[in-house]
Structure formats: C-alpha cells, structure tokens
Length: 437
Image 1 (cartoon, rainbow, N blue to C red):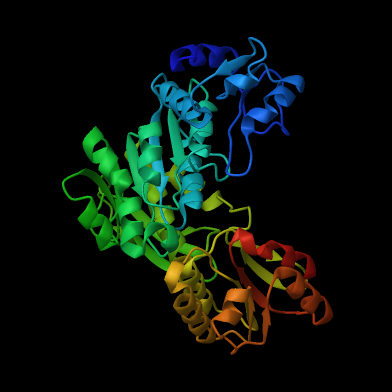
Image 2 (cartoon, rainbow, N blue to C red; image 1 turned 135 degrees about the vertical axis):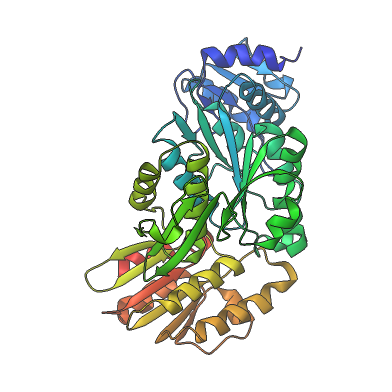
C-alpha cells in the first residue's frame, strides 16, 4: 500500500521540483503534505494538485482520491528518506557547516571561493533545519562537484538528525556560543549539539576544518583527521588580523607556501568584526585545501558583500547604518558590541533588540548586554523588546516594547550625522527602522 523510497525516487526523477506549501505551487512539482502542530498537511493535497502539482505525497489513506496521491507512512520521514537516497546518488563532496553564529556568512564565503574552480551548490537562504536540509539536497543539480550545506539547531539531537540525512564528507563548526540555551540545556548542551557534526564525521572517516583559535574545537576534534586554520604557525592556514575599522583587514597563508605571513598581501574586505575574520580564514582554508589558487581565493574573499541585514553598512544620506538585524544571541551581541566599541566613528548610537530562547539566563544576559552597551562609548542607547524592561534596565535614552513604537519615536525625533548599530534577531523586525533613518 505504501510507496517505497526507491519508488518515490523514480517519481522524483520525473518531477524534481519539491513543493511543501500549497499556496506556492509549481507546475509538475511533487507536493509533500507536511503537517504541523496546528494543521493537517493532507487537507491541502487536493489544492496543490488542482494548482499544477503532478503528485501529492500524503500519509493519510482517507485523502487518496486517485493515482496522483502517493501514500507514505509519514510525509516528513518520506521527504528525509528521499533526500538521503538522493544524496547517495550524487558524487558531490558535501561540506556541512554549523555554529552558533556566522554559519550563513561562512557558507556564502565558502561557496564564493569554491565556485571559482568547481560546480558548487550551497544552501539557499537559511534552509538549514529538518525540512530545509532535505530540500537543499533535493534541489542540488546532478553535476554538482562541491556542496556547502548549512545546518541549524534549536535542541540537542538536531545536528545528529541532519548529518545522518546529508552524510557530509567534511565539516566546519564556525563557533560555539550562547544561542538556543533554553532548548539545548545551557552552554554545555550547545557544545554537545554542535559537535554532533564531529561525532558523525569521526565515525564516517571524513575530515573537519578546525578553528584552532578556540580550545573547545581542539579538544572535541582530538583524534580526528583535522585541517586546522587559525593563528598558529603550524596551522594549515595561518592568518593575522590587522583591524576592523570598520571592515576587516587581514593576511593569510597556507603552510604549503614558503613565504612568511608578513610577506603576504593585506586583504581589505567588506565584512566587519573579528568574528568575520575567523569566517574568512575558514573560507581561505577550504579554498586552499581544495586547490583554489591564492589570488583567486583573495578575489572571492575581498569581493564578497553581505546582504539580508547581516552586518551591512548602509549610507542613508543622513546616517551611517550598520544593519545586523538577522540574528541575535548573547555571543553575537557581545561580538557586535565589542567591534562597535573599537570603531573610530563619532556620534555612535546603539539600537538593540531582545534575545530569545535563553531559558533561565534571560534576565542576567539582557543585563550583561546592557552593561556592555553602556561601556561601548555610544552617545545614545535604545533597547527594543519587553525583556529589557522586565529585566529592570533603565540606563538608556529610551526603552521600546516593539519596533513600531521605535519607528514612531525616531520619526518624531530624527537622528542625523550618526553611526548607528542596529542589532537584533528577525523576531524583532528591526530592519523596519531603515525606513526612518
């Protein structure tokens, strides 16, 4: 009665577009009736077919009306099994990337470097969860040579689930910080979750690119086949951070190069902060390992320009905005604030959004970030989000409960001639403030 993964794959080969939202149907696509806590995906199967999808994968026999309905035991597991099957038909080398911060930027840097030599595919946007990773694998062209697959996590076991679907050959953990503390059971839970990537590769015989700047990676990768990058002379790729005012300048060299690091060219990027220096080194290490020549790597790193509100520098005509409104947790907040503090700019202003999923640490972490903000040298500080108020923070120009309130305030009290760091997660919607500056 149930269609097998192999049979489903045969259908996929004829209809390789995957649709999971009946509101966004694609002609001749394969629709998966994924259900959620508040809806039954099977109820949308008929609509998906009516709007052009070729087949609908359902997991309730009551919705099977004709041979266009493909019955499976569980739609999500069927999608994941299909992606795993597909992955094993591909010859592409897969690099899995995870981390508390910077994984999307690092993914884009890796892809920019590898595309200079290989047919390269990378995760689109942030399709990095238990649905996004399968969709990434299923959208990968058959002739792909290198693939960079981003993996996110909000609880323990998430990375383990994703690597068992994607079966990566290589892995990178960008960093481990205070993110999703509530779901992961504190910092040690974050370490355990992120290093599930190492656990898989340790047993599969793959290789990991290891940031030697952080002891946690050195300790957790012990005994593995490691390709080190960092600031040690013995690292495969060694770098030297020059400054970030506002953009990162640095040097790097491979240990295959007999030249001194001080003799290597100084690279000027359009990325901000020491944290992005580490991401740039990761991309240099990957490029060097896979034989992309140094000049080509440098070109890719220096021309990469972030978008989607990730450390974007925007000149509005009245102010200079640093838009970092895509992600925020205590670690990324601290890194952004320290970089902002070191910037040689006048009339600095901070607008910081609240941080979510911190569990019992929410109050202390919001207080700590407020203290760092007060020490940053900013002339004005604004907080957006009720958690700052609940934490009893009052040492700032203004507290706003939500972004609409902030918009109204800045329309009535415009800022001019300022350098403004806007830092928060997508849930804060701080990108809407661009309109008033």
